[in-house]
Length: 324
Image 1 (cartoon, one colour):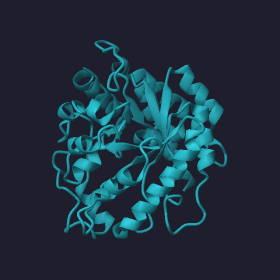
Image 2 (cartoon, one colour):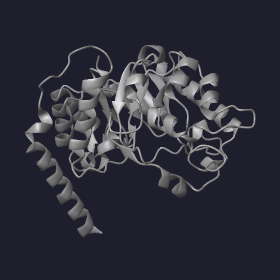
Image 3 (cartoon, one colour):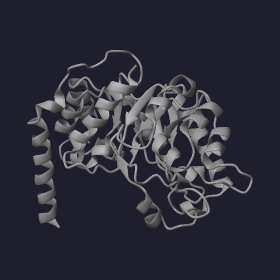
């Protein structure tokens, strides 16, 4: 195990070095200037989680050199006050040194949102960390994970109540609570209601916002545009990631709703933004309707050998086609 870890660190380090030795990654030619969310695109750092866990400083430097303006954090060790073994104060300095901001972070609330757990996560601590980083949003990245195939209407209603309570806490610090979806929130209940609709209906707009993961709503067989029309102003954050053109089968419906998740994920493959099946040029026209403030490139799994090259490819597409 230790040898494997050393090998991984060595390979990841080589990946970092290779990126720094590739000047084409950092070309500033033709970059558009503007104040819109696509001109100032961010990245969810989970996309490069293996790299940032090895060397957060060099990774953030590279992200900034590619052109990203802000980062969405994940994976805080709240008890230790660290991200990737980097104390919060040090992370803040690294961000400042590289002219990066952090408007939002993903914070595990799976127990907090669950009807079945009494040992809830410390939301106040999350808010404190977010405030120190200058973040505007504390985002719940996922529903309770205990039994995703058997989530009930009552589970979503309870989660909405909890999000409202967290929103009241966060409001005192000038922060809002957010919620990030996957595909299962779009499964139908008997009355035709979907989980995300319940969360939106039962949360207070002044306390809770939503981060629409556009890949996942499209993978559920729905359109992002339909939700922007249905709930204008409720989606100030977007996750911008693309779907491999050979993996477009929707994974919501009778065939999939009770299927083991390992089977479902055989139907899922991500790709760089602009190279897949999602029409982001059209979706970007709904930014005002959605109330978009912050957009983040994200790719759950990168298949290119150089992951910095991958996120640069997505960045370039956003810069060329979405930053109008």
